[in-house]
Amino acid sequence: MHIYIRILIALLLLTWTAGIFAEFIIPSGSPAQVSLPFLNIAYSNVCHQNSAKAIVFGVHHSLVCSRCSGIYIGASLMSILVIFVKVNLRSDLKRWMPAAIVLPMLADVIFYKAGLYEYSKNAAFFTGLLSGSAGFLYILDAFKNFINEYYRKKEL
Image (cartoon, rainbow, N blue to C red; front, side, top):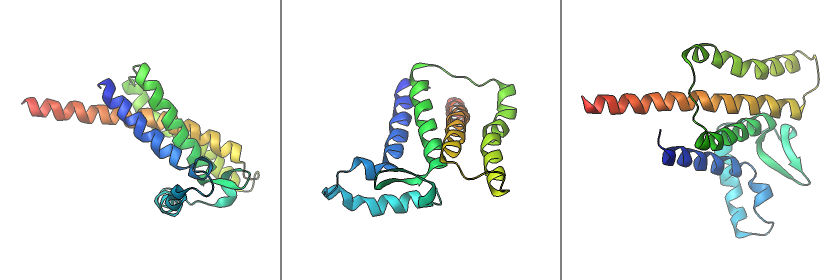
């Protein structure tokens, strides 16, 4: 995959990830604050947005929960890494990777729902971070395969 495509993907993910912290980024009283309700609606399509589970600094909170924040940050960081490091998933990894990606996050959710421990923003964030970074690699690999197949068919 060409570097400019990897850079474009990273920029798009970084923009999306920055949006979840819009309350922290946009200065109070700024005309840009008009965008907050629209961003809130956009992120409500991908997260339950329970404010008790959001990342909070002072009076500001993220527009998604800790787990979703971890997912987006993990994917963004991995997208930056793949600009500089070529990553190819072996075929044996592709078989078990989806289950391994979600296992820690699934365990965290199940243990919390079962009442084995209280909700932890840190645990949610770090299981999201793991899932986001590994999930990005899996999705990027599928995207590469799609592009390669497209160009292969185009040449026929």
